[in-house]
Amino acid sequence: MKKNRWIAALAAMVMVLAFAGCQINSDNHEHSFSKDWTSDATDHWHAATCEHTKEVSDKAAHTFGDYVSNNDATTESDGTKTRKCSVCGYEDTVIDEGSKIVATPVFSVESGAVDSGTEVTITCSTEGAKIYYTTDGTEPTASSTEYTAAISVTEAVTLKAIAVKSGMNDSAVASASYTIKGTIATPTFSVESGAVDSGTSVTISCATEGAKIYYTTDGSDPTASSTEYTAAISVTPPMTLKAIAVKSGMNNSAVASVSYTIKGTVASPEFSVASGAVNSGTKVTITCATESAKIYYTTDGTEPTAESTEYTAAISVTAAVTLKAIAVKSGMNDSAVASVSYTISSGNIPEGFVKVTGGTVTGDTKYASSGNDYIFVAGRTVTISDMYVCDHEVTQAEYKKYCKYGSSSPSSSYGVGDNYPAYYVNWYDAVVYCNLRSIDECLTPAYKIGEETDPAKWSGIVGDATNGYCGPSSSNSTWDELTYDKEADGYRLPTEAEWEYIAREEGTSTTTYSGSDTIDDVAWYSSNSSSKTHEVKGKNANSLDIYDMSGNVYEWCYDWYGSVTSSTADTGASAGSSRVQRGGAWRYDASHCAVSYRNYSSPSHRSGIYGGYGFRVVRSVN
Image (cartoon, rainbow, N blue to C red; front, side):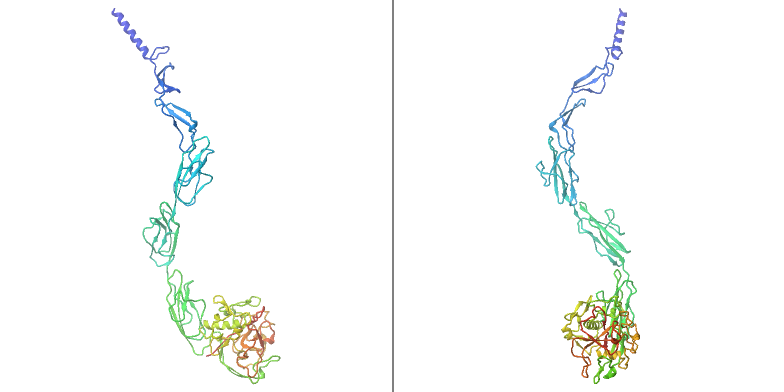
């Protein structure tokens, strides 16, 4: 009995072991299951991991939440919605035709401060969608403005946009707000560009409140990474300062720039003639050892400044004078004032002139020439006063200092250059030159129209102080009434009697031409001139050391042309229509060059195309 109980217990244990493990070919065991869920559209379960794969555990229907749209707000939605089992995670997807949504529009520029005129584009990723927008902050609809081109932002604005497509829900509203950037005021420097003293302090400021200033000292353009300005900058070596101003939300300022050099001192001017007594007409030059420095001077003893007369040419000393001068150059300190004083030596002769001693000439047939009238006629007595006579005909360089040409100008065809005689000059032009030069050299002008001696104020004058003056180009009755002051010490034309007295070497010579009976020695005329004028003083002088009294160009005299009698005044006829010319010219034959030959022309005539009329000046010795 006892034995049978043990057998029964042993059998029971075997049965237990058989069900505890999964044995091949046994349908009666405890199955093992996966921890992961297996699912289908409706249920989920744990599937067996043994050979009995059809066995499942914990099978149950899914537990779903609500359907949720899975689209990005900026991309279109095709209506797909998803719900998920809260137990196994199974996703159930459906298409809701009524939930299709157009992608939200996108702006090319984010909200914020922009430059005026910034172009903003609006795009939508949904193909075929149309975009509508507003600029006043209101909500856009399909009735709003349709977007067709970039929008230019020129003032503060809020852009709102939607995208619309048939068969889909409208997009969400997209929005961007813009303000216009201001531009920061350009920095300013306390010291302008130029030469400064070493150690000069320069401050930089900006009118835009709260802006920061950045600068460079090497000439490179500054940025917000350059040195920030915090205190005055000391200029010790030459430098170029550049600065910008920067402030958040505003455009950077323009770059401001200044350049500094360190000042030196200009060398003092030097005068070519030391103080003391000098001949009247002495030329004084002023120089400065500092290259490119300009010299300014005074003649009245006052201190010169950069507002005084600028020195451009030698100064002719014709009266007692004190000259003072300074030299000035940008970027340097002005020189010290230099000074000289001159007096005029009694009896000294102006430079370029010859003193001719006067005398009394009694008319005689010895002064006559065959076939031509003459001025020292029998019975006429002419008194000639002492005078200074220019030893050459007025040159082109001398003429253009005061005058311009009224018609043609000298050319290479008839001779051109500083030392060639001035030609294309009428009688009116010559008297203008005389008075302008006299005024410039502080002499008393010899000629008046009415009571006026300044040609710039004469009615009918042509030109200006910058380009020079000339007289009328046609006969002018007012100018014809011009009077001559015999007591004046200024420049003037010789009278006809004076001219011949000079040509005859103070009345002592009876040679055919001035200085010789051989014309080629003393004159340029038609046979040797090559049809043009020549530089003055190119032939021999007469015994007074005066050149070209015969030939080169005809020389105007003061007198009206007319017949001369024993009663004719020393200054010639009292009226007429032509003025006297003497001496002949390059284009005329030898007879015109004789000292007794008289020629005449209208005072307005400048010798047409030929350039044969010039002049010589004299001054009375007072």
